[in-house]
Length: 85
Image (cartoon, helix red, strand yellow):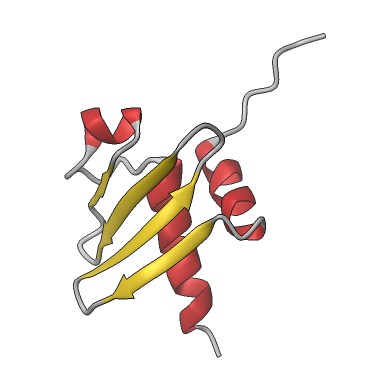
């Protein structure tokens, strides 16, 4: 039996679908949220520029880039879903 690896976009959809993204603030240039991951709770900011900041391990190495972690992708998706009528 092989190891199941969840891709970031799959994890993002699961986090949003399970209601694990709590949007705290949506501003013109960023959205601030708390994301309950599989192992920790992360404060995450998604910027309108496509960059992000997150407290997760991936975020420690990649924050302020456009190589988003699953938590930032989940925030982006959650905000997009809220904006759709």
